[in-house]
Image 1 (cartoon, rainbow, N blue to C red):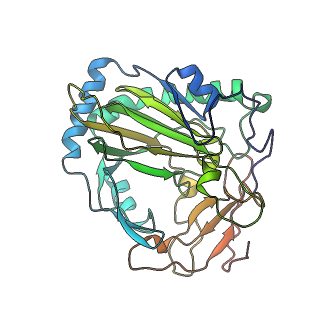
Image 2: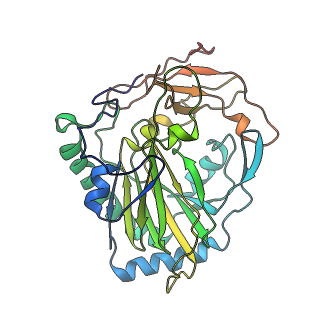
Image 3: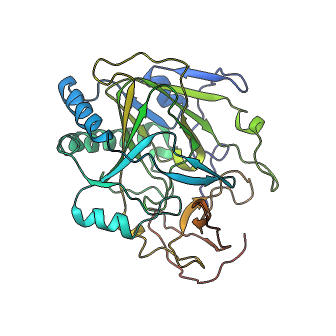
Length: 346
């Protein structure tokens, strides 16, 4: 199913001209500028100071045992995750389900934990503020003041969270879009930053005519935008983010130590896992494992269409099968299952 094209394919009203040079990085600090020029909003001093520090201390203790031995394939090379992380859910039943039913980069998670007391404490505030920001975004930025096609009209309900730890200036995460497989299309993510301030960079994905891959020149055609995320800030990645932009945490030349965290940054990304996107419902590839949901981002032909494919090839020592199937959703992002067992070709 295809995203609605509006004003150059973004589905958004025209923006004020952004004064950035090709290939350059534009640094934004003001939340008003961030909301105007990116698919994000930022709220500084999000939690009461003591709550933020309590959460930071709790998660720094947790991070001592985070999994660092996460490897995956990137362009046929086996690489290790450049930071540590763990995944948090609300019950022991969900821990078991995450370890047995769900796949990430083609493999199952080994480090899944029960949500901590401080994560429980701040979650209602995260849900309240993110839902307020979603409605503000719809009212002020989206065509006709209406939600985007395939965006869920239901309240955003955080029921899981990845917690990442970046220890020192060189730990990072490269350019990527977050996996939509269990979130569905037009997903919203709420992200709290604690400890050392780091740069969160975003860049728009520019589709090309023809079948070629994007070059570095294409990727930098509109430049990169750097959003500076200090301690105790909330970043909301809105419904246009994952389909149309990529984001990263860049290595830093230097950092200013935090009085509690030292050189560490803790990041919590709250997510709304949708029951209708449980892997029991999603297509299985020829490897007999649940598929990953992706969206056409780089090719102008079929730009914005969702599809299911095998992601076993992301696992070291395994190859992907050739399974491919277009994905279909109603206007509210609910899946329309076709359950065809073989793959039509794109």
